[in-house]
Image (cartoon, rainbow, N blue to C red; front, side, top):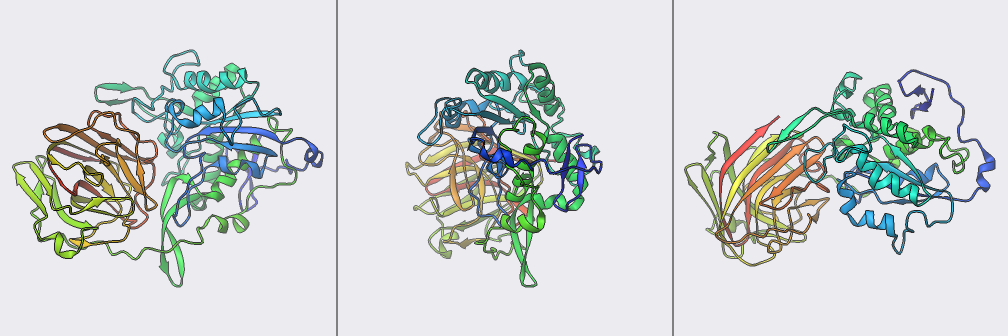
Length: 527
């Protein structure tokens, strides 16, 4: 029975039972062995990040070298599934190498490929979904994607493939039963846009495939479920926190991210991988390195440069903009805010809203507002939802006028702060937008950690006279967006909108700079 230790020193096995274990890393003779080469592919639970959150995100791929004597090349990409990772530059680097990363199999020493997908393969999107049913020979299956894109190329290159099942997503109740769900990577059938996406058990698909192909499997799903349950409420300290509030002379973490780990959690999961894979990595285990401990490692996960944002959520709606009731009876409220020049511009006629039946037209003139590198300014019709609420917002947009300028934009938006008819010249909060910018160059965009973030290049560009469908959906792991006939996107949009206002997310329609757009066929569903 494989045992793993908590940060409090208690030992427990994969099924959660207390157990005794010796120091698996006490092998001084290993210190003379050559460093191995380890390539790592996976999603946001594996990748590195450049966050400015109070306790930033970090995936386990960033901490493997703490326990393994190896040069680790972490190519994991936030938002990636095993399917669409093959379209990304990181996959090309894996196969062909780069100036900093040798091609897989060309390191001239013991070599491994760690494969950490699953979170996003279960997303019901054409670009990312793989079927948890079927074996490695079944086209379209998760097992087939892992085999054809990673396991077979690794073996062909003389590299040992090691498949790591995905970490569990922390649940509210944190019970064994609660992980018999998407949080434990067990999904049900879903019908989206007339297509059925079959459900199944993604972690079990890995176990079965590895047994069939005689590929090493490290079961991080079971191990992290056991760890979470054993730790109880303390399991949250393995995770990222997007914000903090000042209280009693100290900072209290807010906005727990139940999907992504902190550097402390990344260390713990990397240690689990080294411990559970000690037979696989016998030649490169670092001697004398024990599990991370809360008293030694948690403090290092805190961002020392974090400054709490002083923000007061609005307590009333604007009296200057007419409330808009859509065809389903949902009420939306208007506001103009951000980098708009000065407060007088908010109500001076440069921004207008017109209601005709169940359609809303937003118009911006006189070069007011913008979507720019460091600031944004817009008219925004919104509703406030409790943070973490799953929702889907769709609408039809008819473009009446659109000036050819890189700062012009329109679409659907979800954001983590809201201001009522106010000029805010500083960088505001994070958001995601089912829209475009730079004259239609990008397929959706957002702002995270204060930085403007672009989706992939747009293949469909829209202008005056065009009509397009818009889609913005929030799930437990992030956002899925669609802008017209461009492909749905979600890779990279997996950050929570809770760093400024941890209690609310503001969802609605926006227009910036010289644009006039009519929104109709509006539908908002929650839950």
